[in-house]
Length: 138
Image 1 (cartoon, rainbow, N blue to C red):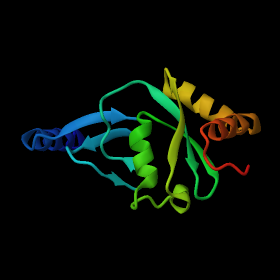
Image 2 (cartoon, helix red, strand yellow; image 1 turned 120 degrees about the vertical axis):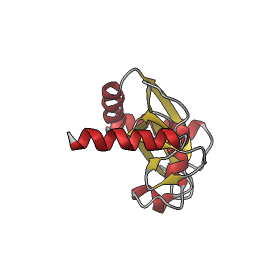
Image 3 (cartoon, rainbow, N blue to C red; image 1 turned 180 degrees about the horizontal axis):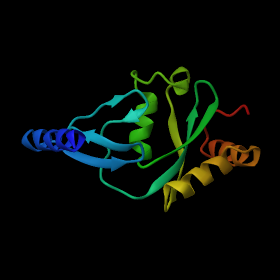
Image 4 (cartoon, rainbow, N blue to C red; image 1 turned 30 degrees about the horizontal axis):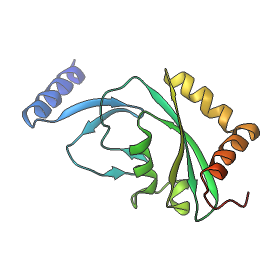
């Protein structure tokens, strides 16, 4: 019962401070009306959406691709390019968004992400990079 009371008090506090809660690909996030990112999680989702996207990024500097999924690929791109990002992608900045594909559910997005991470899926992404006239030495 104490847990429910704490949750109620926290929600009441947030309502008093005019904060909003939204759902995004990384779960329930606190949305403040500001631009910014922390780590690899977006801070500013644009709207509540049940759609998910598979996306591919390309690092022209290092000639690398990265494949992932998100509820908002543009915000996710900002996260990958952020100075605050301490994940694998930090070493290959800057990233460019070269491919997005909309999926009806998180499960479908994860399945498609897994397909794109196979050898044939990566070949598909490399062809897109090549067609977009980025430097290509793959």
